[in-house]
Image (cartoon, rainbow, N blue to C red; front, side):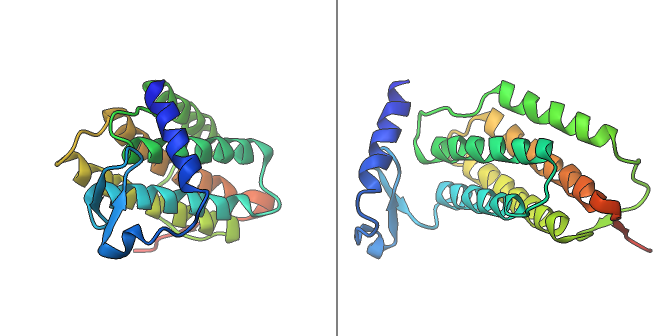
Length: 190
């Protein structure tokens, strides 16, 4: 809890001024004040997590999302902030096993309504589904970057599992969204 308070305090001070010029030398600050290279695997990972969150925001900007999907994606955005905070503050834990289990429950519930896949799905279907496929691919990159960071620094294994399940969930959400309003998925033709 102490680390979480320290993180919130650091963010509060950080947001009081948008530019600091401290990054002009190619470094950035972690939430604990430590300076590291902007191309450090940890920075790359939380940057890709932020991009995943932004891509989910694009999906949420679609006006006619089903309420259950909107609720799920909104919850995931909040959790991704915790996950990013965990990468930005050594010693802070924001993602736990119950977060991974919640994604698995969402996956099972959504996938139950979909027909089994017999071919690969091409990204698209409609704008919301296409945006969700973009979020999925960005999430896959975030997962790869988090694994790269884990080779050099301690990374919570639940965080890694979370990103893996999240990309699976975004795939299933994209499939569900493609079917909205009588739509369909485009299957790969060999």
